[in-house]
View 1: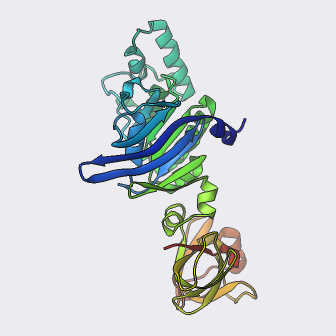
View 2: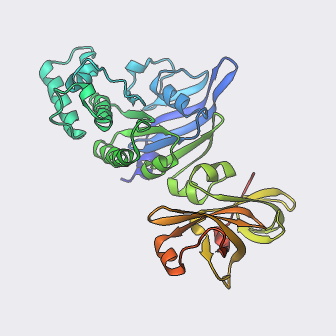
View 3: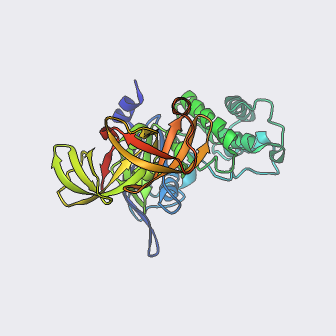
Length: 370
């Protein structure tokens, strides 16, 4: 059975009309979300958007002001964190520096009542260490471990209790880029191996896109869109989502005419474009056009088809697999273009100050509400 089928038949966690306030501050507002068994879901958004508050309510560290939190079909609003089938990996890992790796992982098992015998604890800890590829590190002290190894210890401590839901609060924020990429793969493999539902909080769009089955985008304490990484990237419902999930160019426009999902637009600079949208717009309505930078071609000659505009190259940044250009159009303003390595080899490198053309297919133009 695939993830979509499992999620459709069984929800491991659910937020029902959940609101959380701290005095006069609304941290989360009317959150409605179901999390499927075995799913990898990410809360994505900037600082202060409510994602960590949502995670803490699932964990039991915060109680909702309104609404219900459900785990495995049961309302758990008044159930303390240590009684929930949930474990959490914190941003700073929260490991005990005076204890060995083994004792850090065993700590939660030793607090259980009725008590677990020593041999069972030892077996479970050794299995958790093997799962995170730290089989020989049990006797080590925490301060002897690298950042990536400490994260694995924190994961082992979380999974040793066999939770139904594992919550991760920006666990890779302190890691360098290369190690962060490695840990992303390891987390995905670990989640598939264990079959535990993972819920990640992150402000890193690349992290969310690369790891998640679904992403829950938040803004101002509210959920603004939930979907697969591909859905959110290809079909964002708003400028906010398009700008936060990936990179995009935005051009202000006014709706001139509509026909089905086809929209004729007049840009502020004067030109007319043809875009597509599943949203119903009215003539005269102010909107914005979103075009992903990798969908834009940069050439020395104007193409015969599609939308094309003359530009002047302002900046060029070589990034290995592609080159990032910032170009300026009198009609559109600044435009970001990502040129793949092979395309640049075919067309040649553009230098600052050089004249060129940007172009794209009409299907690349998404019309969004402002």
